[in-house]
Length: 518
Image (cartoon, rainbow, N blue to C red; front, side, top):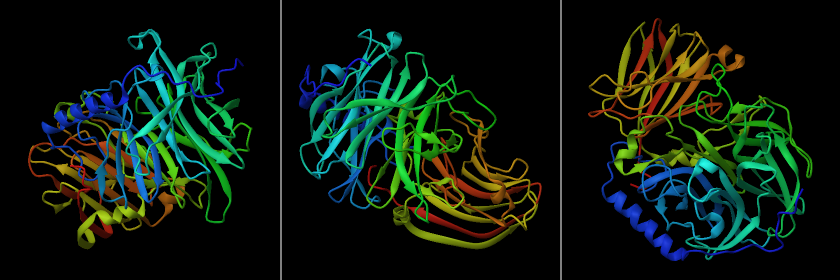
């Protein structure tokens, strides 16, 4: 393959970075000044104003957690990407930091695209990201021109950074435009980088590079090619080792598969993020041992990125609003991230992604309803007006006869609501938006395993924010994230059952506090 890795980073400034950052900050502040908070999250990360998408540069550095994200500061639709930034000392209370990156180099003049952060052997952090240009110089009709870039922070608080420039060019004869989202890690004495590629044959791949100094990179091989010929790009790739409770190591490959066709409950969103579990050795291709499995079965989940904080593998996802109409874009902001989730390799050989333990620190007070019995087609209001809550619910499957039972949240006086239920007929957790008055509707289903269906109980944790819902079943074995644009008025929560009885072993409702970004 043609040599496309320069000996030194290529730095070609075309704009004053400080001036571009100042303009972006002013625009976000202007949008925030007129922001409508009807669906603006209290405990999910969102930009103060403007559009956000992928989480970027996730890290725990010098005692603080840092979350960066793709940001378009000049409007509430997707546009030239910047990097927004928030940080926290406890993952509960967050503060806004200055915007980290704006387009200022030739190779990124149309967008500072997604990337990751990694701490080197010297204890210093590096950012790797994709520099984006339109191939025709003006719009997406001619495709993308993308390369991999390096930057280094100026201080331990990560309030600004110095761009080093391009470290991996794009061999345009080998690539069909898409070539982005670097993830970097170290195995043994070698640093590795992978990112998503659409090959010249329009096959979704992840390429593998290696380096000894984190600056000069050498192409090694295709790390993985998706077996589905419809998948033309593996966006936002992830790759990391994980151990089960007995210490057995596996490797997890994650990606957002662009082009996969809907099939049953699978691939129902425009593009779908998931993972495979398998094995890998340095310099080799990844060998999958499982099928592709979704990280999240909800309507609005995409572009997850994980990192290791020294003890745990933690993942954030983007709640993608790409389904018309996008109601929040009229409110001065658009898009938020999911809660942080810990990635655990369970005894069943699958990944479980419950919320990190720190999320219990959001709880302000608790209402304990104890055990509840409902007759067939019955209901019980458990909250008259819930803006930000977590519900813990344990259903006695052995004693319940309902065909469908669960929680109606964001239930407003106009009859609108979002329904999270166990559907015994199809063996799934269902998140149903058919009664929503605004936004996209339809339902999503998360299938339970045979062992889960045969168990005596089902546990649910449901997080309800102003404009979105996250549901975790059985310790995060299944997760569903969806926007829910509540109507005007009080937002009740009701426990309901359909065509049969419901026995609830326990139900608790926790009121949750703001994370401080409102």
